Length: 223
Length: 223
Image 1 (tube, rainbow over the protein chains, first blue to last red):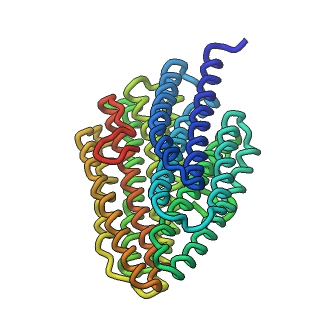
Image 2: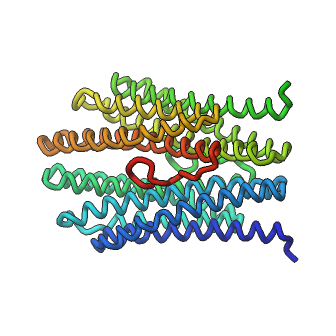
Image 3: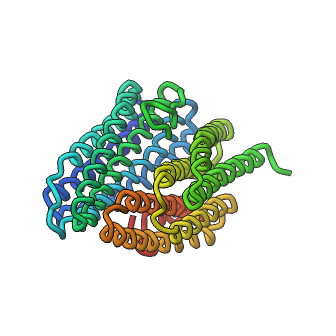
């Protein structure tokens, strides 16, 4: 039978999963509001961000409570402190989804520059990375976490591609500049979401294997 | 006389200060390498980033050790967990300084678009915010932390101004687009550095006053 503390740890993981799914939904809706030019959805998504923020604070409080009350050692303590660091990344991803919505609201006021192809692809990969990063935390699965790291390059590559394509548009027709720059911003936001997922995955590998691979050269850029 | 644990806490604060000063220096040198077109300095600054990364990991390890060994209660526990969250922000600021250096290296390869005026101003404000945010943590000074929050709007305003000015350049002369977009990125990086300083200040206010003002409307944008 599970002890009270074991149940509390399960509850903590469930809350982290919940926060992750809120944030995944925010990314999804942000991109949908852009691609489908649905400004109402962008506004709704922005309005939902405080829920993410309060859940972050709630999880942190629960972590502090568990540390103070249960005085966990070794593995459990690391699990709890990792959860506290992961919430920071998740909350920032929520902010980036808001940033995407804000640019979508602006872009939806003007004629569409071009159909979005690479941006939804980037969003799909980043969301997948995020989902797997959180799952790897909950399941303590460092193989899955390593798989997340491998995908970061694809997003960087797409970001580069989007930038170059839009540069071409801008040079051809200066009337497109304002819109094109905003789209390059969205591409950067998605790249940053993938970076946060990568950070989470690196923390999970450290939690599970004890190997510090945070900030090491994994597959490409060193950060 | 200070107990061993009290000395350990002082040591922890000193390391956070050290990490803060490394990161401040990185911002300073990144902007200097841009303004003075000094690519060697940009490269050196990028090369120094691993020191920031290892110090972040070191501080986190010390925090976990202190929690496990000293089983701190209430105030001390919060101080330690806040330190662990602050290191994440500081490390990300280090990454943003690297991002600035990378754009500086690219920009230094081309003729200078215009003299930099607002960018060094933004950097100065952001650095000041960062310095005060860390000082407010070390001194548990929530008045200073609140002062940091007040300055975030200035940076947002300058970022907006830089964007509009560069948009004008790009529209006038498409040959400037590639450079101008890179400068808008640098402006965004600085805005994000100010956001991280704001996050740190909000955590300090919570630590000292117990009031959750993280992610609340302080003076302008809600995040």
